Image (cartoon, rainbow, N blue to C red):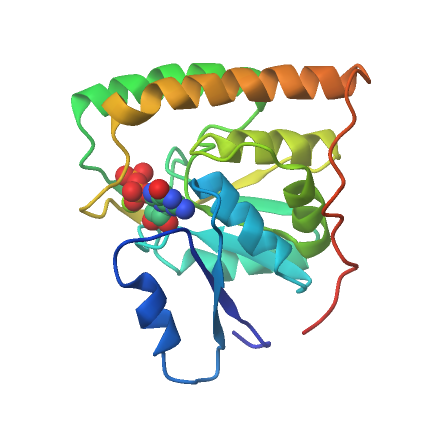
Length: 224
Ligand SMILES: Nc1nc2c(ncn2[C@@H]2O[C@H](COP(=O)(O)OP(=O)(O)O)[C@@H](O)[C@H]2O)c(=O)[nH]1
Ligand SMILES: [Mg+2]
């Protein structure tokens, strides 16, 4: 990167050695910081990480590096040229996707996409774990986030769109990594409930029935 960058790793009660690896990571050009998020779920962890940021451009990617980091140059270039939400898409015509998902998961994904489309318009892959943002927008949206689990991306993108920033999808190289923690049997019901919760909350907020939560109001943008 031609400018200063930093990595935050969110330890979300992990039982592998993630925290130890970060703690013993040698000091280098890119500082790597560990933060703990006791609330379980990927949504909670990503929210905690984003709220720790102060940089003008921020983002997150899956810990298993399924998305090739070449996409970072494209994402940063687009953000510098004025885009505010740039997300990797496995559905992009120019993406290279090496997929090992089971038939059951593929079928579930079709249903998920049909529901997600009702909440986020114009995005073909809401779930790719590679998303970069204008920092101020990401912190503002993270502060309002309420979805703790895997459906959080849908709430995130819907809130960005509600604040006037539609997502731009970019092509990526995706290598499906072994050791997936996602299980259609264990997670599908929770994801459906989360999607329902997102729909209810966003509708209630848009009608003024409830106000978006602001208790963790983000700090103004900084450059450290
Ligand atoms: N905080 C948290 N993050 C998770 C959990 N499970 C997965 N992740 C994150 O989500 C990413 C995608 O999950 P993964 O298990 O690889 O699923 P897949 O790539 O969709 O098959 C991982 O790389 C982790 O960064 C979890 O239980 N808690
Ligand atoms: Mg993965």
